[in-house]
Image 1: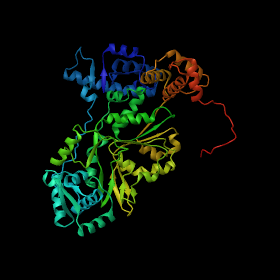
Image 2 (image 1 turned 30 degrees about the vertical axis):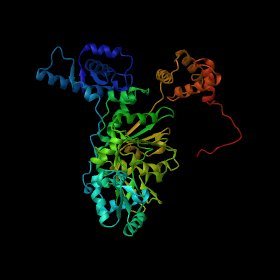
Image 3 (image 1 turned 120 degrees about the vertical axis):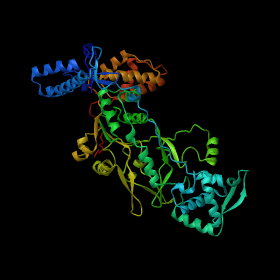
Image 4 (image 1 turned 45 degrees about the vertical axis):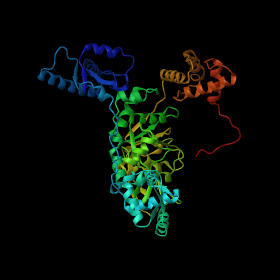
Length: 549
């Protein structure tokens, strides 16, 4: 708690044109807080004046609120007098203002997968490595030791003893040598008959080739070490991430703590107000990159985790040639079986079905594809347009009860066994339906934060137009917005939406191209855009009906 005791700040607070609702006891009543550079302060003289006013009015709610503030203030004042720190120069009691480091916390990820130095460090059984090497040689034909190691994403010095052991067991043989790189230049081929017999056996298990899977225990360790719970959001950092999105301070005050909780969030509100945009910008606050394995080995099964569509790989600073040389010599600066990616933001909508939330078995390759929530570990998983999926909303909600409570999920294999997977992500539900129509009280209790994304007011609507015009390099004209609101909004009481400035300007630009003219805020261009964007409120019957249930 921070109390300002100087009267000049009281006057400054009163003169400020706007305060968030949490600066009052009730919105617009008993103003006693103000924000300075993103930090909230209680103004002690205002607290005392508001308390006196509340007592005069007999306002029990306000008296309880302000009396608690007064008790805290008097306690801090007594401490300052006892320690002798209360002087004429003192203007603040309580916690000191945050430093720059505290207000903009770093989001660096300190976890790095350890580089293996011997094959035992790989965490999988030797026959498992043999099988992947055989399948790789079979798919590539003759291959050098360095190429084979690179395909398996393991340093050659680590795998060289494995290749020698395979030679001794007559599984592979050296058929040539390329270059002057010693053992790394040996060209390997499958040696009949033992090698061919072993190859048939391992192809019956799976045809997976690629990076050597990491053991499941290592994967769990990596998820917990890179947890979203380490993310810290402040008023200053959230303002930076959302600087290109017009939102009120009170919405920021709800979103910020929700992110810090690393729990679940339920966004609801009218369509077109930026619920999806909010989720995408939360990723900016996460900032750092994480390590995701190409694949994991669990109970003998292979699960592919890395998805080039859902995961955005972060380019390493070194060149590809340097990276190849480093892998050959020392294995790089981290275990190459992991890829460094941006914290994932996976968004699904009406296409979501229940099978997409479980392991997907590839019957041809005989391996599994990780479900969406497993790929989202360490980031955000957003279910957009919730309630419009092909599966019943209640069934979808029930699917998340255990993960939300226990922070782990159970996935099913084709053999009937279950795999317990960490559930470490910010789960976001987003809908334009009434939350009470979608979920009962028991489930809504498990969703820790319920946040309404509200319609913009007129001043925010105009600011969005300014931002959109700047991004599209179109000259903004406030008089044109006056005309737009007067003709197309006020007569029908049409609500303002966040998306409308962007959509309408796109319409105007398309029409201007057709008319071979420069984009401007002429009434003709505005009317033409609005007439094709908005639908008349008048009901019309075209002789056909569609079922919406």
